[in-house]
Length: 314
Ligand SMILES: C[S@@+](CC[C@H](N)C(=O)[O-])C[C@H]1O[C@@H](n2cnc3c(N)ncnc32)[C@H](O)[C@@H]1O
Image (cartoon, rainbow, N blue to C red; front, side, top):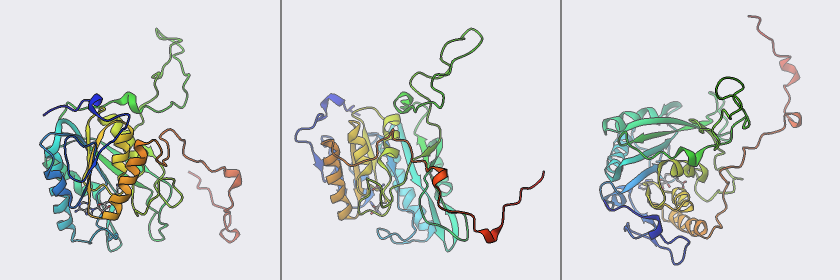
């Protein structure tokens, strides 16, 4: 497998390429058609990261709701091809929520894990992506997280932790006794972001919102791209939607390839990638803190007819 060298890429951009079929010389491929057709164009071991949010089989306008076994068979085919195109030091990240059978919840990561395990993948993290907006449920607690299953193909894998460190809660903290007294007790570049990621989801007033009903935020993919790939690497998204993965990739000097069956989404994806390359893509920056409402300004009050909450004595 020939390595892609970052200096061979057209950065800074002049006459960059967005190709309709996969080619090793294309910076970005946006393939209109089925994900297996795109994956079939990519050679064994060529990608460093496959990251996607597949259809959840919940009857969105871009999918036909199938029996769960048929849906999982389709996922198995996508996963098998994804593993084939991954380099031995590569990663696969499957971002999923719940499938619903009637009113019963079927967590997709639990159903997908055994498929990945059988394909020889090794789970590194089950990342919880927490967000604060979504449907308000009345017969169960409202869903406010989804998961990312991060697998590697082997035990030797790219993991650039320094590229994704986040600020410590107490950055100036020092050892106060012992041989390291006076030295910083925290890592100078920040702390490991952990496996609970609080990132706003793309709802109507999000700066990244497009016509797509379920796009994931760029900053979610950026963290994976920065940690799990090197500049010049190929990042593949078999269900690319409006191109969020491709944007995250080119923003950090990686190549990208993705497929979608809906032409309208790919048209938006193309425009977003172009804007990303020009440094003009509307997006929420990775380091922006999540908005915290001021509790003193809350307008909701406990209705008086409910009385005061009773404290349990234990
Ligand atoms: C959850 S969305 C992904 C959205 C994407 N992460 C983004 O941020 O825009 C799943 C996408 O899979 C696409 N899709 C459905 N079946 C497909 C197939 N067989 N091959 C490729 N894409 C497909 C849908 O059109 C939809 O855009």
